[in-house]
Image (cartoon, rainbow, N blue to C red; front, side):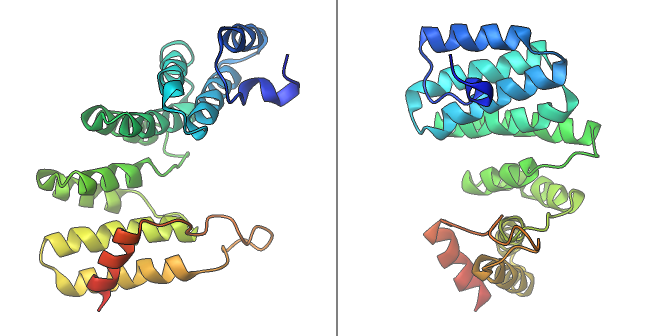
Length: 214
């Protein structure tokens, strides 16, 4: 039996893993804790990079939504579900998951996440130009977070949307903002200087932003 907090951070999902997890989950108290454990276990299965574990991660998230729909966890769960579905090549289902994540955030505005960025980035990746106006409204609806990675993603999306509309000046300024965020070596938090930096950005995205920034 895994110790303390390891029981919901498994990187395998054998029948015994599932049995042990379910037993610990049943003994947990409160909807919020149960929802959190389901989401974290799904996250850790996704982080393994093993495509064979994606259906199990989706099942855990479905249980969260149907059995323990805690407001603090729903948005994160739907956003993670979108990531899983993207990995499975199910783009339309991923779009729907992001829309559910946005709805969850609107119903609980005191909690913030980056689902809106994931939604806009997926719209751009799929070149769903009929949704570009909606994507712009979503960017304007939610405030960008303080971390360089959040600024990079927000400004990068705005640059690409502006370019698609032929707004070259706006596209240039937003691209420069995104590239500046990508070059930052420190976060704005004094004791967590390495948190939220831009790492492993898509080279093609960087190249496109550099073209727009000229």
